[in-house]
Image (cartoon, rainbow, N blue to C red):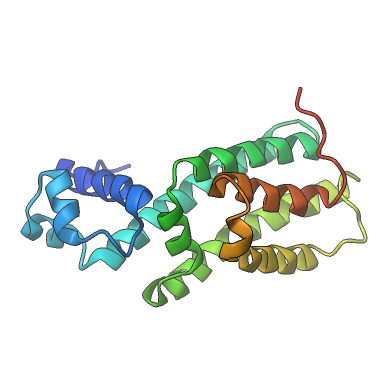
Length: 194
């Protein structure tokens, strides 16, 4: 794989850090450049605008998620264990993000909506394949249609945008875990961690 130019890497890392702290909407190209120690000319050499930089970051995040899902799917462990690992990965990912970033991610900026839907679909196709394989092994109800599961995921994503509900939790990570635990375990208690 081709190594990225150092300045581009610095811009990407600075943007990622700033977005996670302050959200996408509030961070400016100027602030990214200042944090990265790069000029605006250098920024525009690599990215047409801030939206293209966000797409680049989200694609990296998606590629990383896809790789982790592949690795998880190849592990010879029960599906219930895979779900525990998946929930831990989600917890770690959301704990790095500030509330503004999560809000901007969930309330997708209109210029990013099509791209967001594309990467969401990529990840969900891979996850649906994991569910189908688990169904074949008898680890997931065979009567549940993966398409139904996908529809529930979309509805829970909408629920995750409810600011009043999110405010009931100490932080967004706790709320996200509640949503994900409900998705995988319903109202039954989650299996105890070993």
